[in-house]
Length: 449
Image (cartoon, one colour):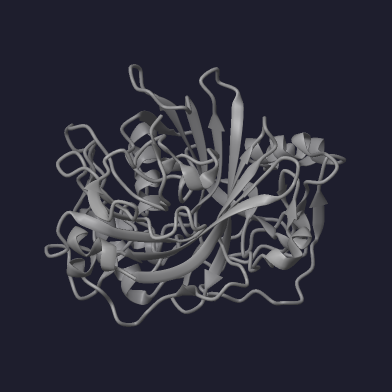
């Protein structure tokens, strides 16, 4: 595995050349997005459980970020009742309860379907449903919305469509964030890397259109602020809709040598020093990057009901770390879990390819297309790591997006937190003044702030 002593977050890429898979649906099928499906492709109806039950999924009504502060847990799932609820959990979550039977549990709240997007994203999603196409190379014909809101075709095609929906999901157009990443030791204590990031999604820039966005849909920049031994180092990265023709491009700024160099190693299972070896490059965002190393398939023809992290709103006070950081995992009392429908997608390593994970399973929220839980298996096929996206509804967009990602090593008892909101200044903002591609040139990398 490659090591690169800089900080990275997300990215997107795909490889291989092949004939397009029919992915567009008919006009009649697309009209479901205004009837029995939500505008982003989830099922509007709730399940049959009474709303007072922790097993209930309410109908989607487009209410946005309405989560009453007075909500209280309706159920606690722990080692004592795991057998009763295990079928309702992602495999990795059940494994976490077994690994930490005395401390890890799920406080289950009433489900709030807060996922939403602006009307123009809904309109673009409906248009994408009848025009977007999928191939082993990438995505064509999509702009400004979920590319495949109604997955169809065989299990392989639908699995890749769902993964692209995660990669191209609505998270705003431009964001800036100052945050920390914490690597928590098995015996307690942590290492912290603080950084500032900028992400620009031209794919969702209304100033452009499907013809003018070009091949790149993400510009990403990150600069390390602390610790001193890494401070000043920076990464710049571009990702594209057709990565077989134009793969991920990335550059690193070496503050010691004061030079910018190409960094093609920022991909796949390269491990970054800031994560203490607990996170690969393509673990960021629970998955990013090229799909080409795995054969993907949808495990169930329709979304299934599971308990997943949802509507979490908290920050970690590092002066009072005991309130949030526990051995092996976050303090469960600070988290919120809800019952939602998820698409379950599995990737198995292709013959002849190399990666530290032989298999990966993703549980993708049907309303937002955010991966909520990821199970990662080692080369012997044993469950090794479990990653959780503690999502949050951001009313200023509106959108459901991760507030904090947690990566757990079941063997070593260590974990890594990414995008941690702490008491330090900065935080996450969505500036109204948008950048353009010229603001993300490699020549400007040392001067970007």
